[in-house]
Length: 417
Image (cartoon, rainbow, N blue to C red; front, side, top):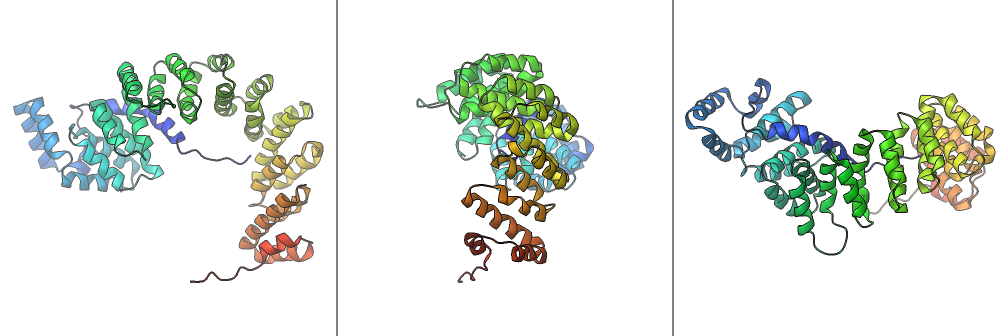
């Protein structure tokens, strides 16, 4: 039950806050609070700006923003904001900074932001800036994203923001801008934005997309919004899909969301709809179930007929137990020995190796394939030796190992310099 993270999944969480945040940061009359203002401008500038605004009106205020918002001084302030260690002050200050930007300022601010490094921790803040720009001038924001083709996050965030407020215009742009006959990547952000207020329309657009990664990415924006209408609504939509690949992908996506809240119902739903989704997700569902109610998960596992579903469920239970109690996980392997497949063993090994390497290594012999068994011995023993060389070397000395494993464990010659 080894879990891999997906970089684009961060986009889904960001899009969920875009509508609320962008409305605030793009409002020309929203004043920065005290803490934020201290990081973005000095009190004298603020008082002078207020006097100028009262005497000259909104047009003058926009000119001030265009002249001051992306000045070298303010870009230096942006650097200071993003390097602040206090998340509350950093967010307040960033709101205030973005509130001061005029339409002509965003490109310099976005370029400066990119230049500071787009780390995982900064992606949400980057989305605030992009969303505010999209609210003010979506075409300029899209032109910027097009000039950085490596930054799909930017284009998807801009399109999602635009589609959440003007879906017809965003969809028209996406459809007329795309060239070629392949999947339209612009639809990913548009569908996510539309899904916030009209998940049924977003789902229809999703179904009309040709197969490809773009459709699966858009799916990640639709399923949570359908789920917000109710689990029954989401399940009914998925069960009505006629495209098998899309149906399986949607089932896997929904099962991940449902498992934490109701693993028993999720397991029953997957088993009632056999296919790739059930095979791929029962592991995860039973793993989460074991973490919430171990007895109920094991009782359910025991009731399953022998076969792939039972082995997948066992993999999830074993993996969860192995994280905290490798001995209990081993007992499960012995209790359901007839259902132990190589994926079940891998689940045990991945999660028990760190906390009890000796116990983990003792079970590698269960792997039937010689090549994979040798790989696991080499991997596990090197990992164990890095942490406790004496114990690992003692085990190696006392247990016969194949020559390929011994070759893996042999000291490597120094790399020439």
